[in-house]
Image (cartoon, rainbow, N blue to C red):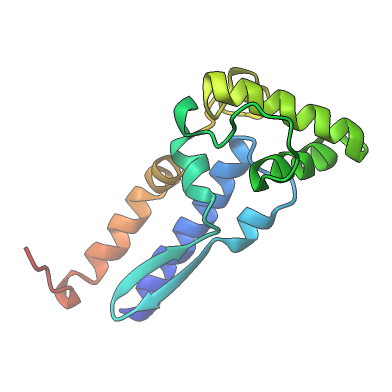
Length: 155
């Protein structure tokens, strides 16, 4: 059964990685590389960097950690600056301007922003977990059916 569970984990990892790319969430590849499956006592666990959940569900405007101040010391602004330097190939001064512009828009619209959809190939920017799982659902069901005698369902 462990081998079949590993197959399920592999299917999910590949599906999540592909869906992230389709949604335009691929710049450095760090998040994609962080997604992994582990099998523990007949359980498939999927791990990824913490920010994967924010990309999956989005962030409402009132949850954006930005107060509109001019300080560059917040981790949020530092992260946006690093993003701007990588995405737009700009220097630190330009990245700072871009970071504050993004922060202001996210504070109004939340995340994802309306303009961020231009990076998406499938028109989505959230829900990569459900969309990825749906893509491999029938394959997972086939595997589960093949091991149904070994599964102990606790209801």
